[in-house]
Image 1 (cartoon, rainbow, N blue to C red):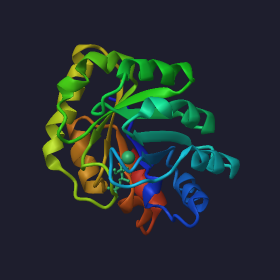
Image 2: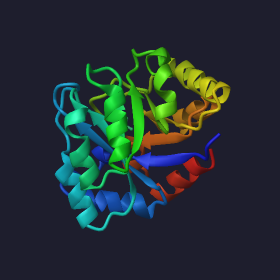
Image 3: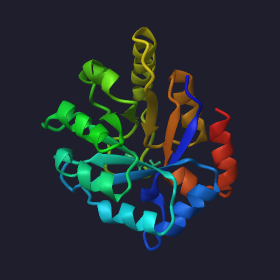
Length: 218
Ligand code: DX5
Ligand code: ZN
């Protein structure tokens, strides 16, 4: 079981000053910064492009960039995000594209690779690819917006991934994203999750450092 890790989601930060929100995340003791990349097609809204990652690096952000691509054609953009400073690039399994080729491309670019499952997608959709990634992200909301309610019906998928990891002696992290607060994080942890993406609850926390410490204790 990996140590518990917090990844604040910058989508819930101050869009008039994202560098300051990133700095606040770093000060809290969080190690990763979760960056939601949306194309207005795979999901209804458009968020950041690679230039935003480059601007955060330029502004001095040294956090690990956990980059979540919600794109219909991720293979077209992985190089731009890698060059802009992404450390991990996670792609959704649902769109129709060359998933294996794109995972290989991500690793060739020197980034870590992750696979993402929407709530309606079963674990069987990624089972054959688990040895090719170091993280699987289980969406606990339908992607596209922050501030949605946590979906408890996704907990069995987390447990299924944990069982598969053990049975096949793999080492990938299990990340959850959407509606995560300290209560739902604890539920996910009990099912086997170890990496917690938090937007609204983190950036509205009265004491982000205490919040980060509480996640680390899970
Ligand atoms: C939603 C994004 C999430 C979102 C999480 O599609 O992938 O990362 O920003 O925000 P909260 O924690 O507010 O649900
Ligand atoms: Zn996300």
